[in-house]
Length: 78
Image (cartoon, rainbow, N blue to C red; front, side, top):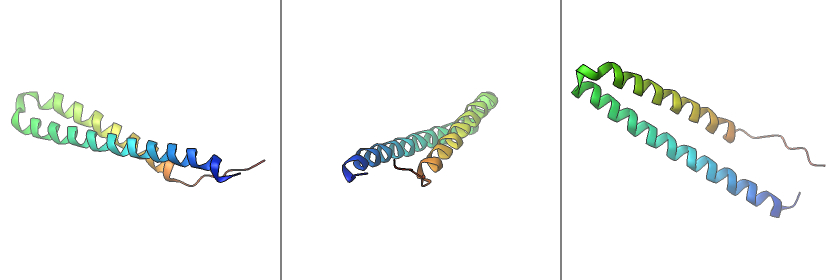
């Protein structure tokens, strides 16, 4: 396989990794906001905890996707 064919794959994977990392950062900021709201609005604590838990689940899913992309893959050339 020539290098010309590998470059777009590497670039595409790199862009995907960067997008996932950015998404994780945005989700972490939202988790921080939920934690602040839990302290500031105790009457809505339950709702903020639900949102925070959903965000943490999304972060875990994104980290799993990231780990799968970072894993070396076996490619069989014809």
